[in-house]
Length: 68
Image (cartoon, rainbow, N blue to C red; front, side):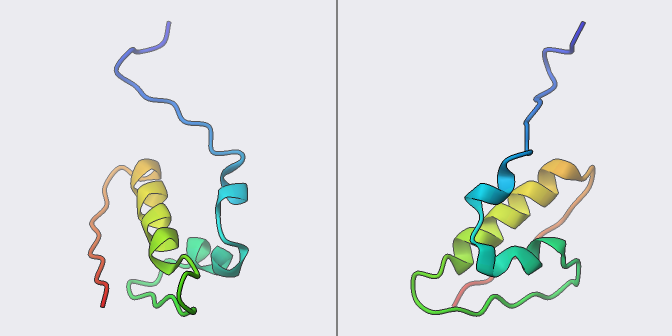
C-alpha cells in the first residue's frame, strides 16, 4: 500500500523539457554557477528547473538565485 502523503514524480523524460545548450549545468555541483546566453536563451528558466529538480531529489538543500 502506498503512502497518500508521498508524491511520486516520473523524471524519465525530463531531458526533453530542457534546453540542450544548458545540459552541463544539471550535472555541475559547484556552489557558484553562471549561465551565459543571449536574450531569450532560457537561462533563468533552466536555473529554475535545476533548483526544482535538485530540491525534489535531495533531502536537504539551500539555494540563492540572483538575477540582474
